[in-house]
Amino acid sequence: DNAGDVQNAYRQVCGEVPGSPIFIMKLSTNSRHLEVQLLADEYGNAIALNGRDCSVQRRHQKIIEEGPPVAPSPEVWKEMEDAAISLAKAVGYMNAGTVEYLYSELDEKFYFLELNPRLQVEHPVTEMITRVNLPAAQLQVAMGIPLHHIPEIRELYGKNRFEDVADVSSGKSVIDFGVTKRVPPYGHCIAVRITAENAEAGFKPTSGGIQELNFRSTPNVWGYFSMDSSGSIHEFADSQFGHLFASGPNREQARRNMVLALKELSIRGDISTTVDYISKLIELDDFVENHIDTGWLDRIIKEGGIRMAPSAEDSRSKSVLSNDTLAMIGATVVAFDQCSGDESTFLELLERGQLPPLNLLKMVRDVELILDGVKYKLVCTRTGSGEFQVSVAGDATKFFT
Image 1 (cartoon, rainbow, N blue to C red):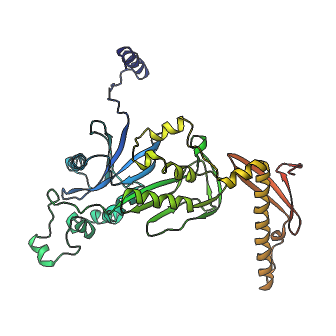
Image 2 (image 1 turned 180 degrees about the vertical axis):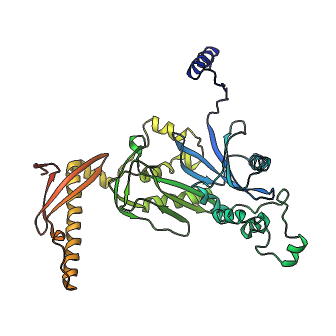
Image 3 (image 1 turned 135 degrees about the vertical axis):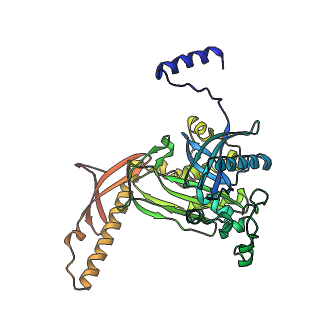
């Protein structure tokens, strides 16, 4: 804000890496992170397949992506697409790629960030609004097929999916992408990254096993999840283990479809997830009205985060039961389910004439649970058909009552 600070900062940077070039860049505040999806072939053709708004971030990591971008005017967005296409042609780019910008809504100016020479995990957003299968298009480009011969690209530009032999021979099937307009986007799509993080603790990563994950795709919502073969999330990899994509005829309907999908998604295990937090985040007025920028979520976190208001039923329960009691009840339910399942397996093996392993009838079960960021390691010992004694792991004399 003043010349003195600039001079001090300059001297500090000079001392950090002596002899290194020093760049001075303009600070862009209250800006959006917008990106243009590119596809280019080996014949010098390059096109923009619309783009995405990835402004909802925490610590510069994307949380929510959506498309098409609605913040810039159609005229400014066309300039951004044309600039991305010009860049791809200038460097002879061939493949799918993404040109990323910072966009200042205040003065309607955009600033180049980078060109990512690959598909990004949020590419289904573009696929849903253009109906172009990007991985398939990549393969066809790699096979040497020109863009105007790729069926889904032809449809995107209002042409017949399949070409007549006569048109191919005469060259009439060639598309002048510089003057031919794309068809309008097919509605709107919003994507949410599902991460193993504790949103109430500043998005601190968590690790552990997942016992149950229930998600049902619908015509308007698609998603995928990944974890290791044991069903665990470990701390040595990126915390994202799932991605949901909700579409609709407009942004508001896509948002509502995502809210419903997040509320129906059930993940039970030792980890914390961002599901409930993001479900509430996209119902905030700022998000509904699209008044967001790259610093929006970080400001919310700095101001104390979203108040995760419990339901009336939860409030009544918490006024009576402590967290220790709730953990004990949860451990008992888990242990009972394990015992019941193993007993059923034991009987099924006997009916088949097989000798079942005796560990299916073990009376002691180790259970780990996480509640409000606290991990409970408990030992549940079965003392009757429907009775258990619960103790703290490593201290058999410490019982829950």
